[in-house]
Length: 390
Ligand SMILES: *Cc1c(COP(=O)(O)O)cnc(C)c1O
Image (cartoon, rainbow, N blue to C red; front, side):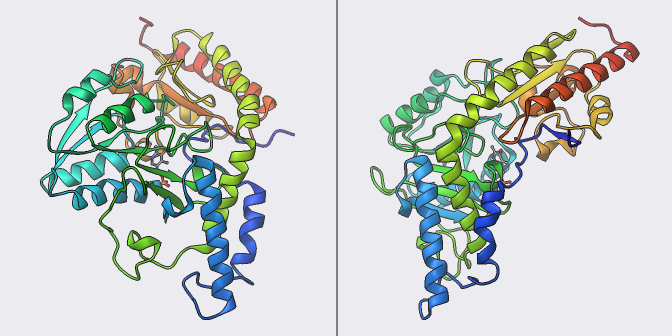
């Protein structure tokens, strides 16, 4: 039996894999120790669990366990990386390069730093959502301390040319930070092959619990230093104080381990479902895909339906199909997506868009159901719409 609503909003969050919950449970009750307690077995047990999780997280992205700093999620990782580098390297310079289609956690952090003397270059993207590498290189100044460019976009799934970006950063001796929240666990990410110096990601986007994430901080070639944004007991090599959330860390570790083992098989199964969904929705009048089809995550699509009111579409689908018109963070406001506008869509077209994200638990039956529901709603709204198709 089909369970409603059909969930197609995996880019905003994912359910915990039951195996992740299973692994976490003992750490709430029997094994409740503080991982920083050095004087008894409960503390040692918790520390051991945290260090195993650190290995599992590092293993998914080709890092050393010591390079993994546990955070409360990608928002904190973005803040810690950008503010931490800006503070630490103040004597070198005050210039940061980022992109207009970043997640709010990066954009707002950079805006915040502008008030504390940072100069920020905001790179534009082309109609496919990709940055121009010549623009990046031209933006570099002697005072540039950080390039912050996301791995894959949360609204359109577009994957930036990470290896080319990191090569430019290396050549100029500039640190490269990437928000890889949408990429880690979905596509192969390797901090060394990809030339990444700092990288934030989050458990709840990869079938782990909410409120836990990791920041990768390179230790060799170059050794990256950060100013802590939270002072206290000096946990996490002094970069992030606070008693470790042991159950959540165990969950993140297990989630990463499962992704490492199952990601390839998951993608083989999910990607054809995405393609089928996309093909059927594209057959509707006025439908078009937003963002590069070539450089894109295999489990997401973002489609505009010209002349259809996106809010009415979402409201009409709401009970039966759970999806969104863009990022959950901006969809509370009625503003059309700034990501879609950066691709050159006008307000109306941006407003007529759906982001469809599939995941580990999506079935072919659910996809067929969603195709039917969306097709029906788009047809109804188009019949009622006063605006003509271009
Ligand atoms: C979800 C997301 C975030 C925020 O992650 P939290 O762990 O919820 O703070 C940041 N960046 C991107 C690209 C995201 O998709």
